[in-house]
Image 1 (tube, rainbow, N blue to C red):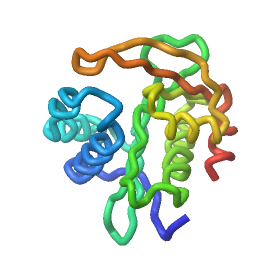
Image 2: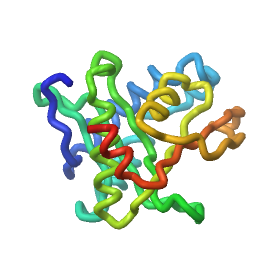
Image 3: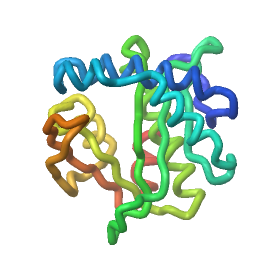
Length: 179
């Protein structure tokens, strides 16, 4: 792993995290989803989302960043699972890392930190959803012990997508594999 700091996101960092999130999202999904979906993505929406995430009291928040040389280069966040899933009580909602920092262990570290936070908040298991066409991410989650548990058809800004969910019935497996 490169010299990096994985830490909880701090109040006041919403705009910086939103810029990383937006850049990574565009980089990752260009070619996987419609150009109209990419064009319709707004940085202002991500800024508003991160303001909401960071407004949660730190003890109930699950938002982490990877920082290299004082610069945020990645983020991961999660929350309690909201659909009422009978097994998975928490959900990792996003993991994004600038391309130049991939393959250095930072994604693993971010995922492990998020899983650890969710576990500390009383959520012993978790799942995450990924685009089925995002084969790199799906392979990454499998390598960390995630099992394919669900598939669903959906839409992203009105365009059809297919998603898959990876689950960890015991998040200690993910935390150990990410370490």
